[in-house]
View 1: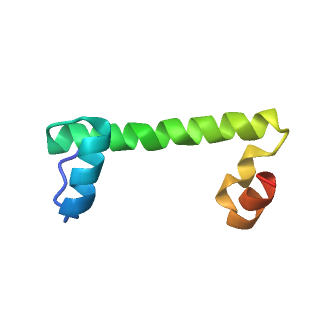
View 2: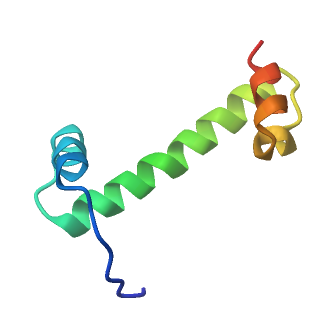
View 3: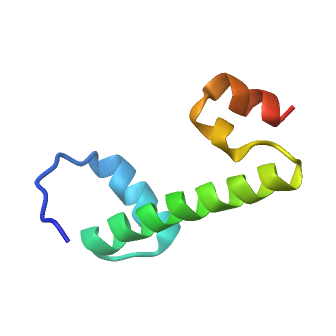
Length: 68
């Protein structure tokens, strides 16, 4: 684990904290990162079900076309 010093938008932090039901900055950031990873996994699974090449996720135009 790496300690980092960053600027954080307080309004976004509060909104995410409320969505996740977290209390601390660390829990909120960890939860948000977990959600992004889970979103990617769900997206890949949905694309795979549609027979789409999951390698397209890096190309915005191809990704948009995959969703029809």
